[in-house]
Amino acid sequence: MNERIAPPALVDRVRRDLTPVHPLKRPIVRALVVLPVGLVLMFGSPIYWGLRENLGALSAWASWGLSALEGFAGLLIVGAALTEAVPGRRLSARAVAFTIGAGVLVPLAITLTTYWMLPAAGPSSTPVRAAFECFDMIVVWAVPAVAVPAWLASRAWPERPAVAGAFYGLGTGVMADAGARLFCWISSPTHVIVSHGLALLAVTAAGAAAAALIDRGRTAMRSPR
Image (tube, rainbow, N blue to C red; front, side, top):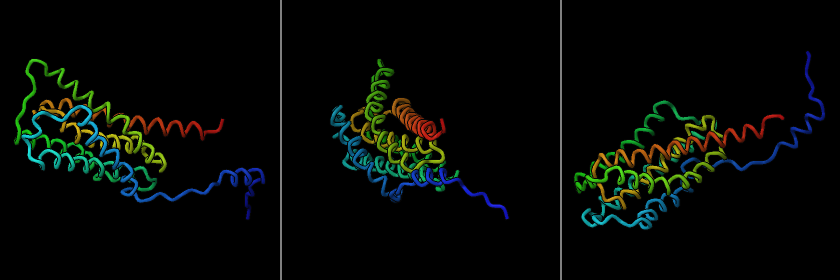
């Protein structure tokens, strides 16, 4: 029976590389770390930009209540991203489709409900400007917030970093939109789908790009020179 015995130098190198690590907590528990970020996006951005003038025309549940529901949905999507980030726990195709569907349908359903209760159209003279302003106001807050779930996901070494990144970007974008509907006074579905939807897409892309860059940097650091 032939056995290969590792040279002592290799054994010593492996021993030096072994360091104790803390086990990861459950994804939903780690997602709670993102809760303060969601609260800042929901309360901080509308307070900074100013609450919509017609907010009082909506009931409490249709204004703050629906925003809280949308923010919670975004937090669950971030939880799905942190599950995907754990090696060996990649989401199934059905779970991926469900997560994407939730990120699209929840904001859309809330938009249609808001428009049904308060059909406030945007200015017909400057629709492009209004769309750009909302896009810019959402992205300015949401993209920096992606850093928190990106850090949490990177600690788990995801097998599909771009997928995990897209999911935590989408979840962060949904949480940002929960605050955006409190400062954006336009309830028109066309405006929300175009402006807010493009902002969600941009934040999702930012998450995927951040995850890919982190993975590339790690791969470069670990590759032999």
